[in-house]
Length: 354
Image (tube, rainbow, N blue to C red; front, side):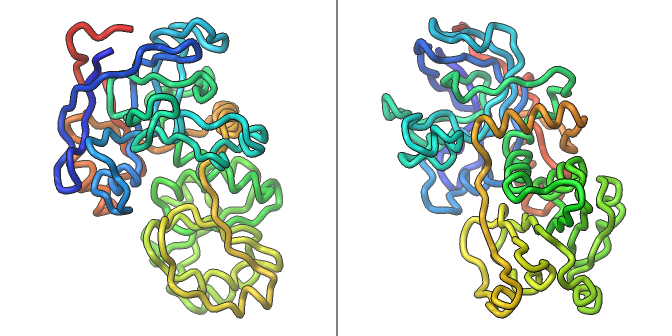
């Protein structure tokens, strides 16, 4: 079917309206009318080819919430009208050990990303959620639990699962001591989720400017990372640190904050880090790890957990036509804490129907 979205045509071009075709339904496909799409920092990077592998035209968006518009003949888990969500991946081989383990994000044959990727069957480019309609394999569609405000769910599909997965992987729960570096889109979700899991949570920031925000989000305290005396006093005080900083930086100052066998998990920076000093690694059997979203089952678990605990991201709603201004504001860190696009602001092309 014909649909419309906003696309980048080149690294230097702003996003602009773009009409394109969504595939006809396969037997295991779900067609979705997109209601809301979150704006992730990676959308900005991909649109501008900051990582060097963007394909154009590029329709971003991998934090998607909508309603089922049609289903293929073999679909059993969803029906027309259901509230659903789609995250960062829309397919995988479904046959390797990682897929069988529910870790499709680590598919040995590579997951198919929601945008800037290739369909596993036809090779056609995948186009993301900055669009009116989406067609996705049923196995990669998530149910939105009742009680969650649909307009605020979208960032859970990336920022939410990106921080929930390492908290679960490293066993965070009552009595855990968690540090969160950075209080942006990822960081504020890490705080909310860690608090809900029962942890004692500290936000680490270069200044005290965000202390009130950190406490409002549920953190127990803010640690000023530029205060050497405060940092020294916090030695060995964390079990897990979630590092959400999205640019090249030095992890060395944070490593002594971990207790023996503690882990600093990088979820922000995609690319190089400053060369670390190994002494705090060796002297405390401390480690640095990375984490990439989560599998479909874990993402559904996260959505269900957020529904039970009434956890939602802090969002600013925008219209589709405001996306380029939103990108500019993201570069200035001028958002609290996540933009969400109301796709009702984008008229559907004439005759669009599954």
